[in-house]
Amino acid sequence: MIERCTGISRLYDLPCDPFCSKITALALTYGFDVGFASFYIIKNKSITGALSLLDGHVNIFFPEKADDEITDELKSFLSFISPSSISTDKLTAKRLNLKISDESYIVKYENPVFEENNEYSIDVNYKDVYTLLVNSGFELGGYNDFLSDFALRINKRTANISLLFNEKNELISTASQTFIGLKSAVIGCVATDYRYRGKGLASKLVESLAQNSEKPVYIFCREDSLAAFYGKIGFKITGRWCTQI
Image 1 (cartoon, rainbow, N blue to C red):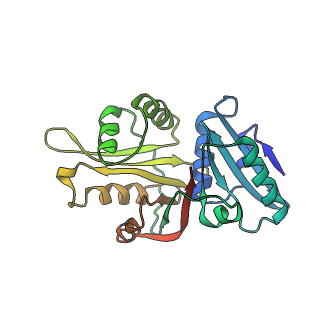
Image 2 (image 1 turned 30 degrees about the vertical axis):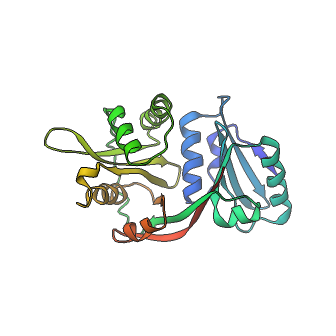
């Protein structure tokens, strides 16, 4: 059965998982009373899955042990809402017969400290962050959309950001916990100015975020080669993500 959530408590039973990080972080950020975001629980006997729909994009966490009946129901539900894009794990994509347009590895940090960290970066020049990310190949859409989403998540403490500057106080590297969910977090938006690449700046930011996270940390690699890069600083491959557009 697929039911719409009306409160965050309905998502408490979700496990530690990167897609659950995204779904619960979005729910904590936007709540349950806005027209552009909705959240759903997928109940299958004692198994719980979840789905978020935000501005036409769907994130899915679907348990491996879910039976064929709930799988067919999820297929019908997706057909009904007709999302513009879907992100989930590779196994779920195959079960739902999604036409995969992009995919790569999911990695998880294996050397956590899990110390309480109450430092959140609020005073950020988001224009500089946006420019660095776009120049590094990230497809973020317009600046105003990026600002309204990312700044809100930081203010809601469902995201955090680390920055490095040169001697002229110019931003040269950045990494973020882009989604801080109920039981885990996702690191993303990792970029370094081309003039400073090859010095290990981004890896230091990522390792620091992972070591000081209060929760287990995952990364959705942008390409397969990055799995080896993150493996050098303590991340291990746990699966594959994929997207249908």
